[in-house]
Each structure stands twice: as C-alpha cells, then as structure tokens.
Image (cartoon, rainbow, N blue to C red; front, top):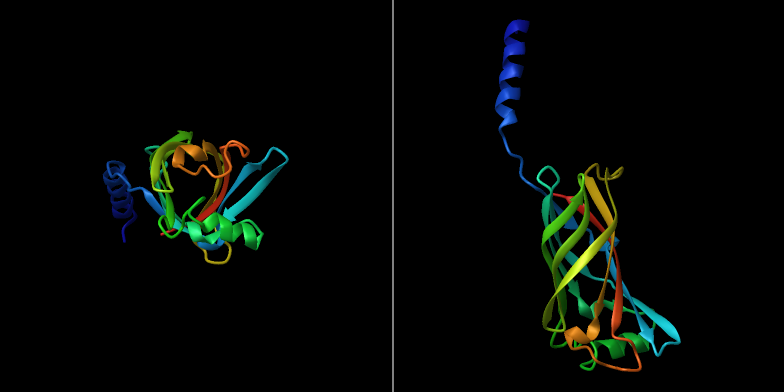
Length: 191
C-alpha cells in the first residue's frame, strides 16, 4: 500500500473516531474474591465480626464520563461469624429471617469520581425487606490485567456505617448497639 494512502486512512479513522462515544465497561463480581463483612457491638464488651460468603452482581463504569452503577445481591443464608451457633441464630426470624428475606441488595446509580477513580457510591441498601439510602466510601480502587486470565480485573475496598434498627433488625436492643460497620472487599472481571 502506498504510504500516502496509509497516512490518509489513519488520519480519516482518527478523525471519525474522535466523535465516537465509547460505552461503559461492565464488570462481573468474582464471588471467590468478594466478601461483604461487618462488625457490630456485643453488649459493649466486644465486637462481633462476620461476613457473607455468597455475593453476585455487576458494576458498570464509564471513567471518561465519570458515571457508573452497581447492582449487588448477597445471599443472607451464607452468613458466617466463624461460630456455627451464632450462624444458626442469625438466620432465624429475630435477626436476618433468611426464610422470608433470602437476599440483601445494594443498588447504586450515582458514583463519585476523583479524576478517573471512583471514590463513593450513593445507592440503596435493601435488608430485611426494608430499603434505605446508603453511601459506600471507596477507600481503595485499582484495575490490572490479571496475570492468569489476561482480562482486566478491578478491585476495591469499600466501607459504610448504618443503623440495623432502621431495617427492622432489633434483636438485643438496647444492650447491643444498633450501629453496624461494613467493610467490603470486592473484585470484578471485565466482561
């Protein structure tokens, strides 16, 4: 091919591409590397910590437009305190009532960015059949090309605090504080 025509073709493709808007990237949550964990007061003498072992969902990010969304579902029956007796009790009607409310969800359509890095997500948490606003602070965010599967993988560490009593989980009040602190490790694979 004549170099003159090659340069003209490249210039035309760059000019045409300048007006093209690229779609947001979609990432599927990796359930083997995602664990929403929490801590809650136990009569003021200790903090009980637990996590949920089954999570699924998607995250979309458009870093150029600084927009995105999150749609996460947590299997509440996968609760794990590292203590079988507490796991069984937490699944009963007086705490999570997993028979009636088998999932918890977090959905966000507003993500704040600092440059091209997401720093918070404003959305709604549905827990125990109640939906309330919740803002996740994204403390850490990084994407890499995974060395094994050669696909882009993004990871984040997010946190939030809420009152469990706002969601109708009143077991042990007022002896146990209603405040719950979330710490969420998440990894997601670009689709």
